[in-house]
Length: 280
Image (cartoon, rainbow, N blue to C red):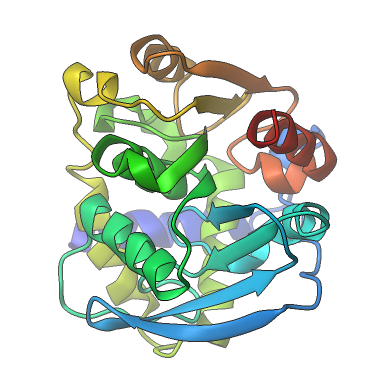
């Protein structure tokens, strides 16, 4: 694990370097503030406590953040979607305000967490908007539990590890995100001094997962949008095109002048794309 920690030390160093970014897709804006919640709590599921918050009323939509992330990244989307939807956001296991245990991270386990959360909240079916790891969790649910989803908006997701761009770990915008995630973790996590241990634990998952076959993807019957920013620094366009070709009926959505962090860089355009798909 020493190699993993060295990489993350390098990322923190890059994040501290003078910012030269000028294009929107090179920036990492602060999330918009979340609106007033209708309900918040911690669901005791799968040996952990999963922190969740509910906003608004109407057809349900579950928003799942990416690796190292936290609920607040969805501020702009929650503010808009909660006008006519029941919006559920949660901190994935070990992320944000949620706890973790010694169980190895896997996308199957994280999908199980979110299905258990839906059961806990008595939500039978929902639209799902997932970013990065959240999109992968969405694919996992679509493959194994399609009866729980109405639609899937999967942004910057991959089905195999070779869908990840090799240079992502030295990209300045991605480095800034890792550094920011570490700062937030120290402020809100139940284990604020354990960020390095958490990163090591989740990095073990990233080294070998996901790894789905074409046949797995062809099982998906949920109406699916495969979404990518046109300057995504983490997931390749080639792999995204492959997902859109392989998942039956999938719609390919390319977000202009945006990267892996499109929901922050173009909140209005991102939310419009989400609405167009889940309310179609």
